Figure 1 (cartoon, one colour):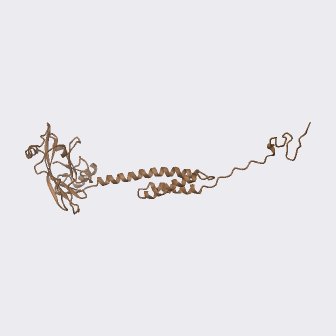
Figure 2 (cartoon, rainbow, N blue to C red):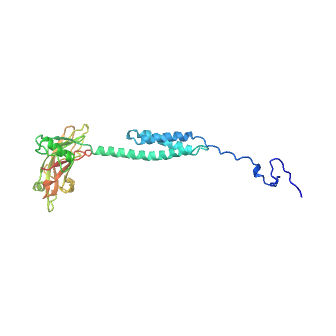
Figure 3 (tube, rainbow, N blue to C red):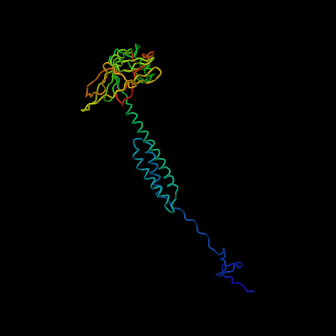
Length: 295
């Protein structure tokens, strides 16, 4: 029986040679795992993402956030694909840059929406034409309390401004001088083609003065809107009916600084509650409406 030579470090149970397996006991220790290096790019991306996210939430500093967040996004991708580098900070930077961008868009559109809303709903200036024509005979302190409770004079239908109040926007001033609450005969007589009132309706006439206070050397045409709001909250516009009023207000004329035009606006309203409604007055398209009493 042949024997197998046992050299140093060899086990007799595992014959050695090119046709025999290697003795596992003779193999050296397993190599230690290589520690991943610090991801500097991921760290820079995370810092940019954090700072960009903060600025993206500040309306006045959105542009800084929009500069830093894309940079953080790109660097985070580079950090994620770097071999032998830790991925944690790069992944956090990627997520934060995406979320920050979404937040930035939300803040941006919110700011734009508020700016547009303010532009088209600027608070008008109120100037009573006749100081004696006040909202009530109460002492000033009591009247102020009532105005505050109703949200300010003219801001609600429950607390309308008196007739003769000048309502001014940026370029135009509108004043409702008076309202004729029984003008059906006058309107019908003004033009035979005017629509006759339906059952339960009648015409009223709002005598209005529009003044151009702008400084455009080319002048401007009136943009005022005068509507009637019924007691139940329904808006009635002068364009809802076809009628030419006596001394019709000319809204097509061109006025220059300080120029004004006066005339009547016909409105077809419920006959039984005509004196219980109010007028909704907007001196121009960019100014918040104010409510004016009809009597």
